[in-house]
Length: 491
Image 1 (cartoon, rainbow, N blue to C red):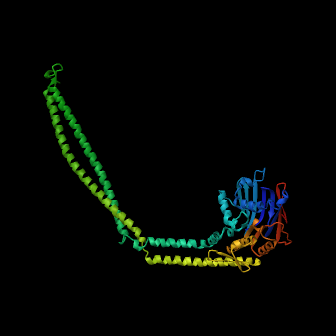
Image 2: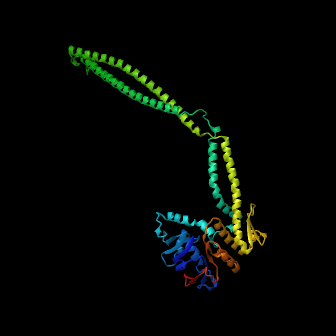
Image 3: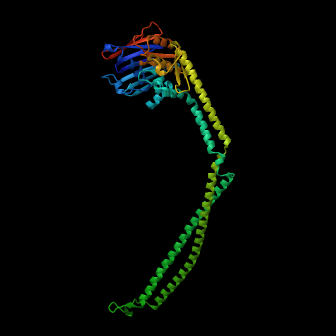
């Protein structure tokens, strides 16, 4: 990525600025509101870091908020960056209040959410952590060398191990599968018959249908028995009623003397009595017939219930057999032998040995790049497998990192960033803010000469630098009356 142009409206002290960047850009500042401050507070960091990180990633440094970025007494802030990616121009416009527009060439990138738009930016420019760690050098940025040997080792390993983690994860998964489905763990040893499973399934369905038919027949039989029992009960009540009528006709009870009295009984002729007696006899005969028929129905019902229970038992047994057979089919994958497992063990060991060797070679190639770039200041480094991990030689004298001068550390940190990007086949933008303050003019010039040979666009902050080199663009940001303005070559 190469930043071609940056346009700013109402960002902190910058009311308006539009800067076209060259391949190598050097920025210095003047603070006319405080002559004792030199270039501090002029707006250099606002121009090259706050504006750019806000535009690309919506990033606001710790201690600030989006509201803090808006120029005093203004209501909105706009930053626009035009970035060259291969042969395309990516234009990003970000505003406060929140608004984000992206164009690739003349085509606007449309997405439902700002998150999706940010994902598009990250895919083309990399995520903000990598950007801040390897494309930016400033006092608040991340310098892996200063974090210590453990962090340095971990960071460098992260570039390499990702190549092997996926392969190793797949190998472990395959090994785990073979351990799980080892023949040694197979509990069901017999041949698994799909045909037998199918026959059991058909038989089970037939038994279920038979059980349903029996249940329907049982229900019908119970209804028949219940109906006949209802008829018997009704006839029995009628007979009782008729017998009561006959008794009432034979005698009554005197309400005064409380004794039987023929005179006050219901009057009924002998002929009527005979008719009632005949009807009672007929009903008794009918009841006997119904009782005989219901006994047969009850025997039939009992037989049906026995058949139902037998069918239910058979269904349960068939289900258990089918369930056991279906459970046994899981063992059809239990086919791996100890040899299969050992093969994957060996594959993982080979991968680990290879990755260790690869890491060693990777670090060696990184050291070659760094040493080539460091040769101008007679410093060289090497990565080792011991606890020091990074060894530094100053004119062939072995030094610990902590023994280096502040300027050497700064130079080494810059070269480290260049080397990592080159090793990852990445080019494009490098921003160095306060990280160059410790370099004297001689080493700064060495850095410029190195940059001119590398495929990077550099934006460097260095006070009072003067040069007639047409390949270097000098940009001055001047603060006056609490407003920062940009001056330079063809701004």
